[in-house]
Length: 560
Image (cartoon, rainbow, N blue to C red; front, side, top):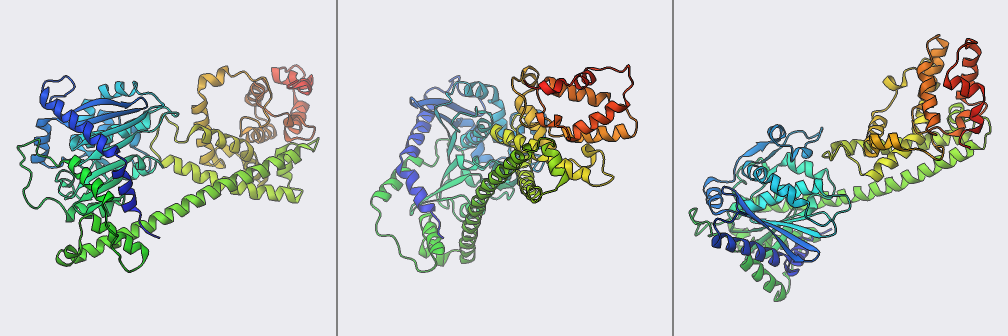
């Protein structure tokens, strides 16, 4: 096991992407000085502009206006804004709030500026081609605004569009640990952020003293000794606290007196080309690779001896622990992939079990399982339990994610969950009513994960589409996964002498929409047994669409 922060940093510096982005930022600064009254510049915030670098690459750059830069250097990193407050005032970032993480904080200055630009930036998003690569960049406070805009874009881009990449230079931290955890709920969002920070840039360190702030994404740490990448929040905070400008501090009254990242990147690129033999460090590979990273981040051997060695040692320990945690998380992702493959296998077994049940000309899939007469029925119960455990976990994880248009899962996952629900819930219903005295499955027996999967499927399909979706073929699986629960309740109602009218209307609606499987009409199915019992007590003069359909045996031509 080892840390690859040095290799990743070298790749980024050698790619020329960072140089191109800083050139765009420098061009925007130059136009700001030449055109102080440009309509692109909000009077109290940041200046932004779109650059078309290539036919398939668009860059949006944000830089602070002169007055904003001076204020930020004098006043510090800005306060933290509570998420519940901006939920009431501005819905732009409300999607970041989740039921499990409803409250977090955002940099107040950055949020105020982003809010002031929200209408223009929303319109700007409509101009991007889904096939074009989009890079959002910024410097200083403009970098913090770029980060918020990227979060908004990640939530609002079309599903087929390429996700944006955010690269900032010398940006202050954006939010607290609550915001970081919210971003981590989206598996790919955190990896869309790269922040370049110099060892002598004061702006990113303005909020380090406030322990509420936490880094988001990956940080490229630059020093005279080299550069390295880190994505561990604790290690990043410690590095920024142990480094920083000690001599010739920035004059707060000079907005242009900022760290020149163009010079830094040029020096780093030259050092990669002319790098001497790598320093050999004895010890375990992980610790050796971390010590090399610290060397590149400005912690030389002399500093290790002269500065606070306890803090330095703790930094090594923190970095080691983070790498080990990432390795375990990677193993978990591999395990998750295996669970997905296992779930597909279990589903295939259940589909085969259903095919076997269809060979019985008298009973339905539901009744075959409910009777549990053969070993295959016991095997089906095992497959059902495995699948239920998998989908319960999947739904719980989806509930923790930021909401996007009410759909926590991607459409393909929602329809996969629908297929699972229609296949497996009837078996859960059979188990529930097999226990003597059980009734009202909907209130007492139905798992919440079924309810959520059904809710998400309806939202994904859309109410109007459901109304206008005329079937041409009958359903192979009854669309309402609770059909058999409705039937069991109708059996109890019949036994207690209660009205069956609602159930009649419910079944007839499904039949007219071809939304039930043919298997319900098999001679010894629970449905047909219920019908015969119901028919025997019907008044001679009672008629309904359903009773006529059944008495005339029109169901024999169902789907023909």
